[in-house]
Amino acid sequence: MVRVAVAGGTSSLGRLVVNAIVAIKKHDVFVLSRKDSDIFASEPNVKLFAVDYAVPATITAVLEENRVDTVISCLNLNTREASDAQLNLIEGVGKTSTVKRFAPSEFGLDNVEVAKVDFDYPVLEFKIAAIDKLKEFPSLSSIRFITGMFMDFFGPPPNPPQINVISIVIDPEHAKAGIPGDGSATIIITHTTDVARFVAAALSLPDWPEKVIIQGDRLTLDEVVAVAESVKGSKFDVTYSSVEDLKAGKITELPSNIPRYAFVPKPMVDGITQTFTIGMAIGLFDIKGPLLNDLIPEVKPLSLEAFLKKSLQL
Image (cartoon, rainbow, N blue to C red; front, side):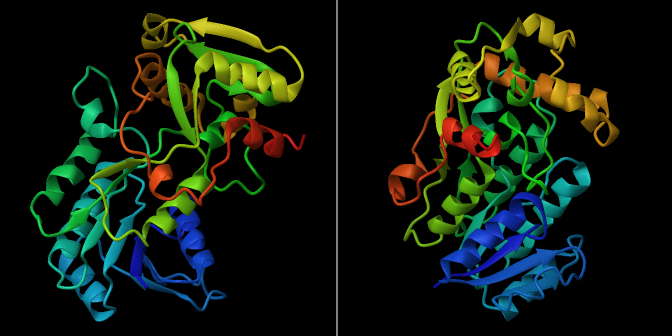
């Protein structure tokens, strides 16, 4: 049995991770949050603690008092403030006498490899800062969960949505696609619910490798379109964009994103699309390395085909 704390466990991917751990019914689960909340009031097996991420000592105290031995960070590192919170979390964790394992908020690209190439990735600085910070605590075992692109962005979200998503690459509802490059690039895509299930299952591993890939599906971009067309039963209107065009801001607009502009402004949608599609075209989502799937074969992730059939209710 593991005593695990999830930082940022009240929403988005963090909430999914908490739910997946609870579903196993093997571990004691704690949630670290910036403020008090009754979100888990109906779940007696989850205890929430409000912590001050600006004061690492308060984090240390909470973890030690509750004999927490594993911490998973699901903090959304989209601002420097959030990055500073994770760095302080690592400081607080590293100074405990109880925590032996820590997972930073990675969940995407292999940022160590991204740092080696010329790629404008806004959160790269924050991701690398966490990796470097962990080196200050060599006795703390850490793991980077690398997931590729979230599959959620390739189909209509559930209602209510599990994470805030926009449509990227394909728009199955409107049979349209905007493909970066010539379509031959390979990408890893993994659904967030599968990410959560793999993370929960990894708690039972006796040892954590430095990094593992969680793989839902591995396809070329042209294969992504072919799968979507097969599920939809119709040909898509496909536009190919060169990396040069994408860098110039020439983004193929997917119709399902238009109503989302009321919540996520179009420049932000275009910026997110630009970053991820350039990354796909230059091969950053063709991630190589050890698969967590091989260590935990009992967890069966969704394929893109199964996800689209489910999300389109076909």
